[in-house]
Image (cartoon, rainbow, N blue to C red):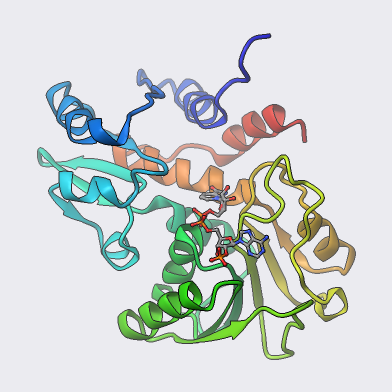
Amino acid sequence: MPARENPTVAMIESAYRDHGLDWRYINCEVHPDDLAHAVLGARAMGWAGFNCSLPHKVAVIKHLDGLGESAKVIGAVNCAVRRDGAYIGENTDGKGFLQSLLTKIDPRGKSAVIFGAGGAARACAVEMALAGLSSILVVNRSPVRGQVLVDLINSATSTKAQYVSWVGDYVIPDSIDIVVNATSIGLYPDVKARVAVEVTSLHPSLVVADIIPNPPRTMFVKEAAMRGCHVIDGLGMLVNQGVISIKYWTGVDVDPAVMRKTVEEIFGV
Ligand code: NDP
């Protein structure tokens, strides 16, 4: 059976085709021991930049020439961009999340709950904080990891962050405007896994975002939609991080709808 098309490659190249951009996006698997050589290779070949995924998002930093503002705070890079011959590390995961969030709500002055405190949660929380979020409750299974994220937000941004231990079904406080699932709960193949939240506390004025791209309609997305919330699925972040990466590399604003259609077809939406 042929391997399934890589969703990110297909998504980025659909935008290139749609805009008549004579560019290529190539998927390369790099062993951690070869990361330095891979970045040297990209430089030697004159690449405009590259994305990198786990496990390279932190390790790549020492091979780059500088960091963008939010990547510096987040401490992780998923996109390198060549600027005046130097490779600068950016974090388009967080920026992509923020872009999709802005389609429903401006986080400025608002309050959020974020489930999770891993790399993706860090990127989403920092971008919301830099965009003027007033306060954030970090709800995470591991208190140590949760507190690390809280300390980062409190020290590096003007958003007030607090750790909340995750016991049983979490009840969303009435003061909250935005709820984000930034854990890996619900990712294929664990599609039946549910985020432990008290469903009746999801009220229609909430904006609820899930960052799981596959499947886009997670249990959490379905529950929030059933409760009448304003829902953003994980394809929003995936597509918009691609849109921002392409803008960085080519200078062109591509159409997110074309990219979304491509990944929807791949994920069978
Ligand atoms: P990490 O491994 O760094 O963090 C995973 C987080 O999920 C941790 O906070 C972990 O809690 C929590 N978690 C996992 N399983 C459970 C569970 N059963 N119950 C409670 N908490 C749990 O992963 P990342 O942050 O890098 O990625 C998280 C997800 O984000 C991935 O599924 C990935 O697909 C998605 N993602 C989506 C993107 C998009 O474009 N849509 C971009 C990047 C990531 P603990 O600390 O207690 O272990």
